Length: 347
Image 1 (cartoon, rainbow, N blue to C red):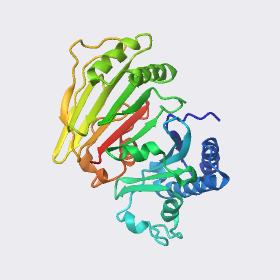
Image 2 (image 1 turned 180 degrees about the vertical axis):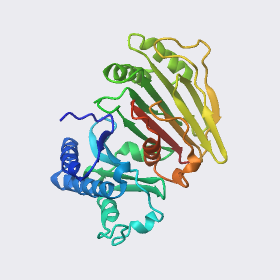
Image 3 (image 1 turned 90 degrees about the vertical axis):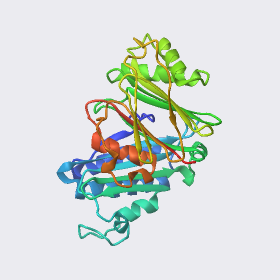
Image 4 (image 1 turned 90 degrees about the horizontal axis):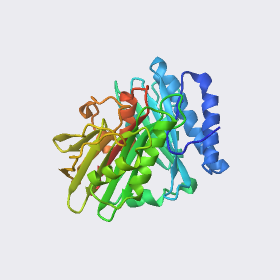
């Protein structure tokens, strides 16, 4: 089995007969991540409980598991991230359902509690009529990567990246560059999907990581000039500065971006064009306020663009990856690669 540590591996739970296959494949991913036998056992327990809940509650509406290795800055895997997407009815009182012995199906009611106990990090979002999303992270020796701890000082970033069904690689891509006062984030969508789209996005990100830290529009021009031998891509770069309280954004093509602040939602506009093919000579940065209560959502066209945050009460209080997973669950088109990134200020 080949492993791609760059994307969330996607497992569909059509019925109980798929459970052993899914558990076997995810067990192999845990072993490839370097987990001990005991840690792999924890992963298997979490997967079993999640999959059992999907079979019970999602029913004909379906459910799926997403799993991705968590890596240190040097690329070495140090943990696993497991996301459970349940399209069932959802829970009216999710906190109570976390208690052992509480069940809507007359079972022992230990599933959610067991998942939380076996996780080093756990988060959940469930509302009646909206389904349920679970997020579990398990670290080798229980230690989160140093990069995660450092980034929490100013912001949190979470993402869900899933290739088009049937593809091993994704034509969508993203990367983050930390700076003293904030960070630069780039999101790419290589034209089409598969290997050639992946090549275009990968080359663009390589250029982004090697450039001097300049304005987003300047960096995009350099990316455009450097990927002309690929099939091209659409993309955007955001730079937020916590010290000055400013966000600079520049995008080319159909990358969707929204900025959320108390009482205000702004759509971030991108220029028409394609990186590596044709980009207007007049592209420039758009400036927005970046405060302690700001949240930025960016996604490729693998997600429908007309989602509405007001549909999800209290979702913004949760982990950014969980927020991204909820948006993915309800809005993925399934006919293309999907990528959604959530950035939330913490100071």
